[in-house]
Length: 146
Image (cartoon, rainbow, N blue to C red; front, side):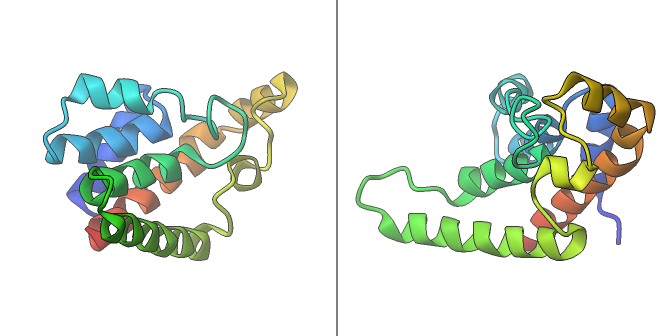
């Protein structure tokens, strides 16, 4: 299954934006958020949050989209918080089922916060093979859920 949003997210990643920027910005535009602002907001989350190898940027980008659509913005709106958290749980469950983890260093097999490992990941072409697939998976799951 291939969706237009997923194709756009992968194309944006291949342009040189991070996984989080690619996923978040494509969907954010759909919800009226300016492309430049969306790219800036998601800019710190690539490489498992600023290359720390933690939560995959494709996942954090997707979680921001769920928040953008369903998130709590009135202090008394606990229903929105619960709906958001439920959707996040569903997204994470589906992403893990497809990929085995949501953690960047587990998905890539390298810790990007260690310069030698980041170089090895790049040399093995993982940013051209694994990462685009993760971006696609995140975008396709999101599109189905939204």
